[in-house]
Length: 192
Ligand code: GRF
Image 1 (tube, rainbow, N blue to C red):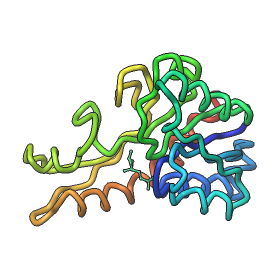
Image 2: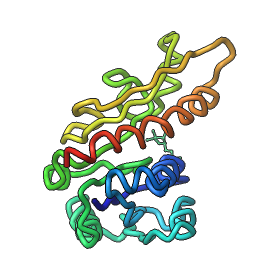
Image 3: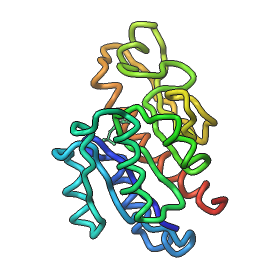
């Protein structure tokens, strides 16, 4: 079962998934392989990691496209060349069109750095701090047409402690993201 991962930046979640997938038990048990990492940004740090791990690393730059629809069509064409059972958004910072989302319905996942349905959108950790939350976290969910909505597959909770900033919370949450994302994928794959 082929997996395609979409990134825009450092790709630490992508790296965690690749490491999990390349571990023998995961691959053997699930017949799963990360076939390609595709970035909308040519300078995404995660592309080098993918190449070093023998995975196709591709760029579909959103900038030359006149509309989201045209970008999403080009992105879908790049994805479909790898015939994926699962498409994984991992720090992919573009809003996807309803057409794109429905094309991959049921096999398109995202990770969001909040305990959804709280704090969809950007600046989640600062908003949790401002709201006086005592916990923060991350959510793995199926992607639906509405941003940061869709059936929840996994969540992790971390404490917010005195002295925390958005950055310290982000680092604490990211560590958990790296655990729950590969695990959620491993649970979903046999059903696809
Ligand atoms: C993660 O916090 C993810 O939840 C959010 O963007 C960040 C991406 O980090 N959507 P990385 O590129 O996986 O390191």
